[in-house]
Picture 1 (spheres, rainbow, N blue to C red):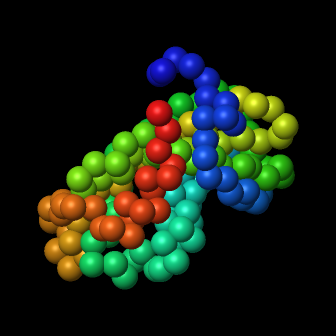
Picture 2 (cartoon, rainbow, N blue to C red):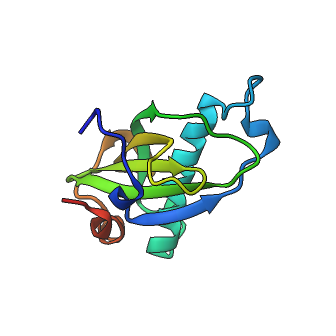
Length: 146
C-alpha cells in the first residue's frame, strides 16, 4: 500500500553498501541523488550476480523508464546501508522493482524506491523489445512477491 512503511519482511534479496563522506549533503543527510544511485546499484548488482553474466552485453538491455522514492527518515554517513530488493511485476518487456533502504537495526525502511526497467535492443534502444530475455526472467521471477 502506498501509505504503509515497508519492513525488512517485504524484501527478498539483500546487499550491504558502504556509505561515503561525499554521500551526505551539506546538512549531514544522504543526498537525494545518492538514493537513486543505491537503487540502480541494488538492481544491477543483483542482475550481474543472478545471471552470471555482464548484463551490458546481452542482446536486450534494461533501461530505466521510471524511478521514484518515498523518504521515511534520514540516513547517512558513516553507517552502512542494507538494500532489500523485491519484484512487483514481470511483464513482457519490463520489470518493476522496489528497493528498501535500511540503516541500523530497525525493521522499518528509511526509504523505498520504485525502479522500472524496460528492455530494448542493445544496438537500437529506440523501442522496447519482447519477450523479456530468458536469463533476466529466470533471475527476477524468484523475487516476485504476492
